[in-house]
Length: 321
Image (cartoon, rainbow, N blue to C red; front, side, top):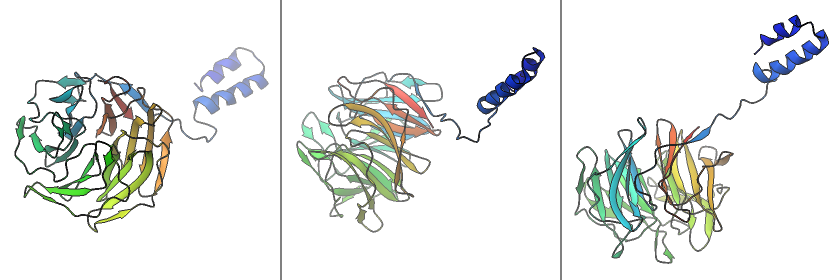
């Protein structure tokens, strides 16, 4: 737009006014003024998930998001989302044990679904889905402490399951599954704050547990180090206390999106930087406030899928930083 200054002068208008007009345009259109660059982050709506549901397990394998089980009754179906063509695939082999609020973790290209709530109550069931074969492995050693709403994270090829609840009782339990041996280890140092429906993420070999509920809605952050079997609890609290938030790691930081604040559903997106022990808030909230969805990262983008805000959602929204 800077070229417009020349045509403005040719119009025979006042040179002083022309000069003033030129500098106004320069500041806004040619990068002048030395101000901070505009926030170009944005949310976009993508193809909806075929089955509306909440309390889902999920995992990313080979650039695809697999969404498993959940609530809308107690569900067992598996649906696959391909961000590349913005399409869903249905009809995949269902999970043998229908359940909601299970924990899902990816290890070695396989998705492990652990615990949750089934038709018979709280479960310790451990099942493994192989996307390359569209098959499930059953009969794996069950988690010693049946529960739902737990955080899971993978460190050094082992799956750690932390917290959770049974009915109104929340847990601070930490148990670890070794797929190579099909064994569980118990007796690890418990989490300082028992809670369920927390968000979580793994960075630099530590598992961060964020928010959740234990009678109160929480904003506390605690980090578990499997290497030293120890917890760090003096970390900066999340700005928005909530449970049922969805979290994923992107660029060495944990993005926490949506959730339930105790009075309403939120679309708040807040980012935790473990290296600085600091939080930042994104002004552009998720378009659809909700809780108990799932968040996954592919190609530097954060996908927020499903959830509940009075009705079960099939919403699929992506945040582009």
